[in-house]
Length: 178
Image (cartoon, rainbow, N blue to C red; front, side, top):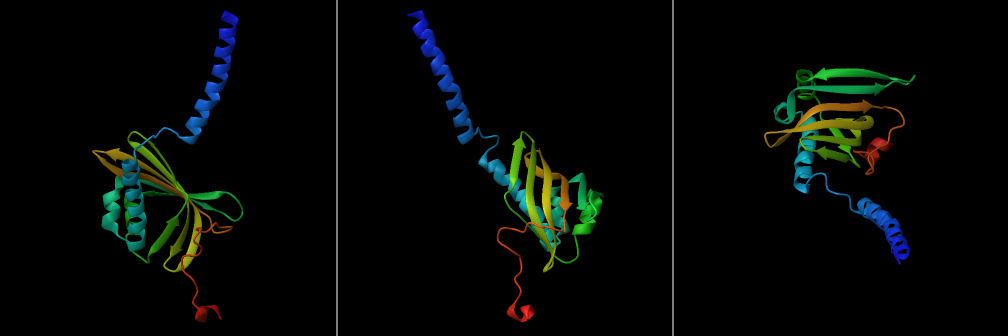
């Protein structure tokens, strides 16, 4: 009788583990609340709004002072050129000039406590002209109940670009096409 019980217990254990694993895959535990996700994405979207509007005041509201910002520009002969910008440099560079229209899609958001990471492919237009595409990686921190962008990193690729799933941002008019 004891051996029969042990066999049933072993069989149940073999079924329980795959079932728990399947449930965790189908319904992962929430690492953050929907409200918190919305707050973080509002800050991220405000950054893109500030670029398009060239709004230095909005950038100052969402960028953490003393943040570091790094771009990696892909070179046609291979490798990348890194460019680091301070908080002040970023404000100066992105506060004036023609609109920067950056569109992201399929973003990933990771959150644990007071830190978050936003990662997404993007395409970018300077005014109406396509410039480049690649990936953004933004780090955020929560301080005194609000989220700040602390470090922005992005790659710049001008060849073999993956454009936004909606297609080009601006369509040529029939007169421009002839």
